[in-house]
Length: 298
Image (cartoon, rainbow, N blue to C red):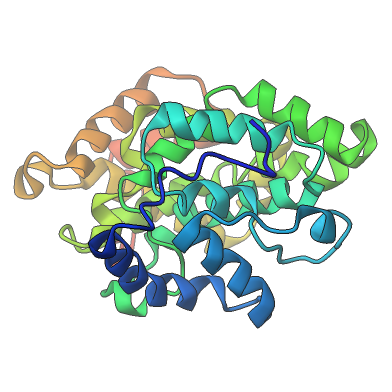
């Protein structure tokens, strides 16, 4: 499949009801995609969303701007289909196309991770106030597509950026995203309203996403983590995170995605190897040896 001409049968443009529903969805999407883009680039995204119209790829291929038009994440998210097979085929076509710019892929990966792991655990009470994409259940679909074969993704990006030196400089941090900071985001997720759409669709509840997060605890991230712990404020934040993970009231919560997550993360923290400083912090929290002030407040 070429990006110049994809299968547009998923856009039911002759179905008035379908088109009216699609148009009704656009204002909320425009609010988040138009923040850092010019009107012309927003219109490129709009035409894709409504009709499946492809950008003029040759115009944008060498356009080295921070915010792109139809980056990888946007391309998959705004496609009408939620079928993993359909989206996987589109993903591979995008990754292997000679029409795209390296930023189209890097921005797609980077923003997906930022939105779904960092911003989605923020304390927004209403989606109307949430200034980032909200994908509902499509976030885990896209995660599985984009991260299922991480070596494929790295190889594709390696080719796009042109070698190891550029990969280390431009892309490595994306595939080692956050490291131990994930535990702080997990903590913030536990503080959210249990009925919040952001809470209900948080990626930490899924095994694949959780396992990937643990792979980002690399040697370099461990050194960065130890440096962070030298700050009393940072140390207290991690202690709060582990305290809330240990003391989260699953009986009060009931059978929810967070309760299931708590059972999984307890088992992981108990049974897997971590650097000694982090493991000991977990053991001390469990033993009640660490005093934590206001752990349930941001």
